[in-house]
Length: 333
Image 1 (tube, rainbow, N blue to C red):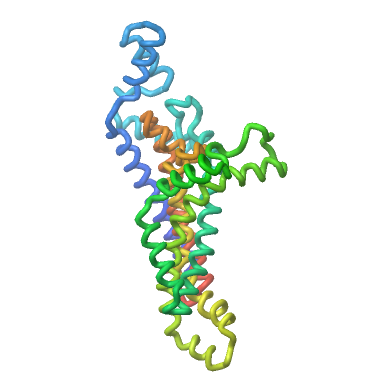
Image 2 (cartoon, helix red, strand yellow):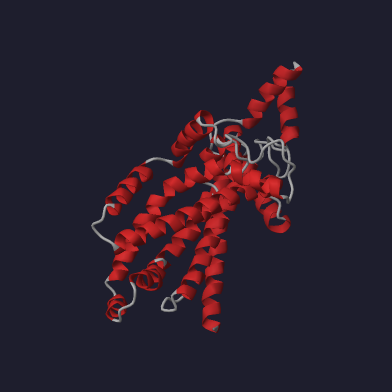
């Protein structure tokens, strides 16, 4: 027990170091992006107020609480200090509110569509993969393989555009933008919850349709390896039903390698949903990430990158622990 705690502590320490390195890399990377947000805002202020450029630039610096003339290493030390000792991610240069406020307001929307998408695609894909591994040389196998090949080559935002045009514009079955309609009152009530789920259908479908094929092929590969194990042959020799062998012996053991991918996929989707959320006007992390890139909002980009990095690293850590619980033969080391 003490040894496992020691191993887990070491993994946590390595995870913290990884987060620090990724955060440092992101800090300097975003400052190498082309464009000058102060210059862009100064031009807008100059046109709106009819003042000189230098005066407009000073106003822009004051409004954004950001001065590009300050050495980058001083900006970095200040940023790390505020983050570690105060939990302060800084202020958004464009929205002029704390980055943490934007993250906390947008995170639930992204978690909603990404978690639903991952769970739906994981269940359907794993079932199809186990089925085509169990029953080889049926019509289902080439259909699933062809579907996976096509969807893996098509990005999710193109699927989202197709769904938007067909189901949203032409058929008008689902709303096209926003997380909920203006006619409902936000709150913990049934009409609001149902309306939120109704507006989430198209984004969830865009993610799920693209991911089902990948889960199916991964499950097929895992299940094919499990079929050669001795306990499958023993179960068949005992006369157990095919359904019981498929669920309790094949599915239970073949799905274990999928758990790591499940956790990591959910984490990476937190920051990888930019185009889909932008298409559907969904106010999640991806939507604000796209806006931050367009406006060179350094603080917001750093905050969103940090959330994604922490999510991926924690997902790996949780997956390691869960993996050992599902399969006692595997140790944390």
